[in-house]
Image (cartoon, rainbow, N blue to C red; front, side, top):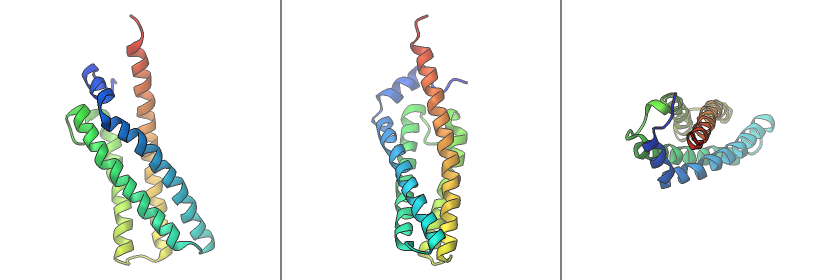
Length: 154
């Protein structure tokens, strides 16, 4: 399966949104790692709930930013806001990731779960994020291979 037509590849390479995604993705991963450590510390020791909570809220904000800018990127490259065929399953799983992170915020601000329940929900959201990040890393690898093939002389 070809990810990009030549025109899509050109739009991708010329788009500022590609750079934005390239900055936000590793930033989100860094925030995820720190937050994961803080959430696990809270679950294991009972300490640091406020810091763990703030880190999950920050992770969710970064997720929202990458999802909004990612949909703009998809519109620029594929002329679809979401669910372009090349990224259909990544977008489907992304919706689950967003749902779990949003459920965390709702539960936090509506006081629907205990601190432990919130931490466990955050870990479920993070597990879904890991799956989704893996999907995107595979696509990035596929795109690089496709680009190398396209650049090879005939």
